[in-house]
Length: 359
Image 1 (cartoon, rainbow, N blue to C red):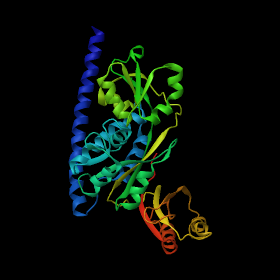
Image 2 (tube, rainbow, N blue to C red):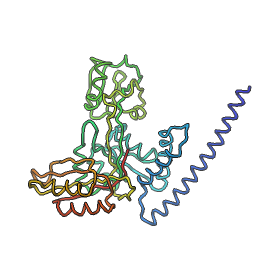
Image 3 (cartoon, rainbow, N blue to C red):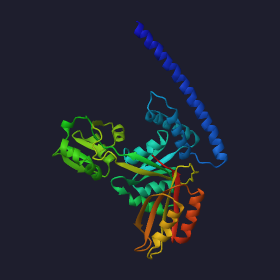
Image 4 (cartoon, helix red, strand yellow):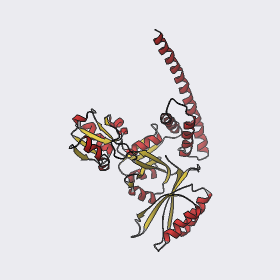
C-alpha cells in the first residue's frame, strides 16, 4: 500500500511539472512570435546558428544533471526547431533518400519541425535553395577518411549561395535487418565506401555472405525493409526511418570517421569570436605566385589556415582554383585587411562565407 501511495505521489509531481513545462514552452513560443515581428521589421534572418551556439554553450554550463548534456541539447534543439518554425516555416534540401547521413545531419541541425526535402543530386540541393523552394541546403564537403567531396566544392565556386554554418557528423555504421537475427542473413547491402569501411568486421563476423553494392546506405536500408534475408550497413537514423532492428552497432573500422557538412543559404552571419571563413581563389600561373600572393600575407597576419585544396578550374585548362578555410570572420579587422590584399593579387577571389566553428 505504501509503495503504491509513493508511486501516485511521485506521478502527481511529474504531472504538475509537465503542466509547468507546457506553459513555459508556450510562453517561449509567444516570445518567439514577438521576436519574429522584430526580425521582420529589421530584416533579420530567422535561422541564427550564432545565437543557437550561444544557447547550447550556456545550457551545458548550467546543466547539473541527472540528464546528460547530450540529452538536454537534443531536447532544446527540438524546442528551438519548434520556435523557429513559428517565426518562419523552414524547408531544408539534402541529398536523399530518407535515412541518408545528409538527412541525419539536416535533422540534427534543424530538428523535427523543419520540412526536410530529399533530392536526387548535389546540383538539385543548390537549385532548390537558389530558386527559393528551400530555405537552406545541407551538403557534405569532406570526410575524415575519404577526403573532400569535390563535386560540392565545384558547385560552391559557381553558386551565389553562401555557407551559413558547418556541422560535424560522426559516421557510425550499423548492421540492420527486419527481424534483427544475424543467422537469417544471406546478403549484406550498402554503399561501396561503407562496405569497405566495415570490411574487417564483416570478414571476422559474417564471412562468405554475398555483398551487394547500392547507391547509398539509405538505399540499402530500404532494401532491407523489403527483403527479410538481407541486412543493410546504414545509420542508426535509417533504422528508425525504415523500422529496422539493429543487429550490431558501430561496425566501422575507424571510430573517428566523421563528415563535415555545410549549411548553404543566402544569409550573412555576424561574428561570434569563434568563427571560420571559407574562400576560393585563383592566381596567375607563374613561379612563386602561391607563396608570395597567398601564403606570405597569411603568415604576416598570423592567421591560421585549417585547410587548403586545389581543384582544376572548369573555365580554362591547366588553371586551378584553391579552396581555403581559416580562423576568423570576414568582418574582423585583420581579416578584412587580408582579403583586401588578396583581392589585389588574385585573378579571382570569392568569399564562400563566415560562420561559427562547428564541433
